[in-house]
Image 1 (cartoon, rainbow, N blue to C red):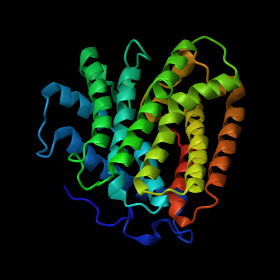
Image 2: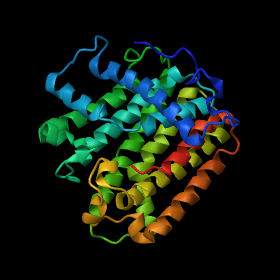
Image 3: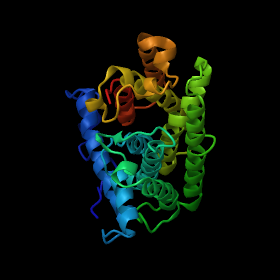
Length: 326
C-alpha cells in the first residue's frame, strides 16, 4: 500500500501558512481530503487484510459497509493534526487515526439499533441493521470495537508505525477510558436515561462531555502520544483545546438537528426533539446555543495561542466544527 513519504501531511509546506490567499475553509478541504485518503487506506488494510480480500464474509461486509459509508473523518483528522502540531511523524499516528474511527463507527452502528435510537438512515444510506439485520449490526459493531484496540496493540497491522510499547499501552488506556463507562458508553447511558427528563445545563454538559467529548479528547491525546512529545504545557494546552471543541461539536449537532434538513443531514431532521431528548437548543434556545458554541470556539483558539503555524489545521478544524451544517 502506498504511503506518504513526508512527515507532513501535505508536501506543499504553504498549505496552512497564515499568508496563504486561500480561505480557512478551502485550506481545510484540502487537508481533510488528504486525511481521509490516508486513514481510509490504512483502514482498508486492517479490515480486509494485506491481500485486500474479505476475511469473514458477511461480517466483514457489514463492518466495511458501516466504516466506508461516508463521514468526514473528523476524529482521525484531529489525531493527525495534533501529531503534526507537535512535530510528529504522521506514519506514527496511523494506528491511532484508525482506532478512533473504528470506535466511532461501532458507536454509530449500535446507536442506530432499535433498542437505542432506532434510526433507519445514516449519512443518507440505510443504517447497518436495515441494510443487513440486527444481529449482523450488533456483531459488526462488536468487531469494529475490538479491531480498534487490536490495531493499537499489534505492530504487524500497520508496520510503518514503529511505536514503543509504552506509548501503545498509553494509547490503549486512553481510548478505553474514552470509550467505556466513564466516556462514550456512559454518556450514551445518560442520554437514554434523560429522554423526557429535564436536565440542568451542568447535567447536560456532563452527559455530552462523556458521549461526544471524550472520544474527541482521546483523538487529540492519541495524536499527541504518537508525536513523542513530552512537553506537559503543550499537552495540557491541546487537552484544553479538545475539551472546548468536544462540547462545541455536540452543541453544533443540536443546532443543526433543528436548523438543517434531512437531505443535508443524511439522517432524520428533528430526531432529538421528536424523542424528547434534552439538548442545548431546548435549554438555551437557538440563539443561546449558537452563542455558547462561539464561546467554546474562542476558548479552543485561545488554548492554541502558544502554537505556531503547525497548529493551523487544529484552528481550522475548530472553525469547521462550529460552522458545519451536517
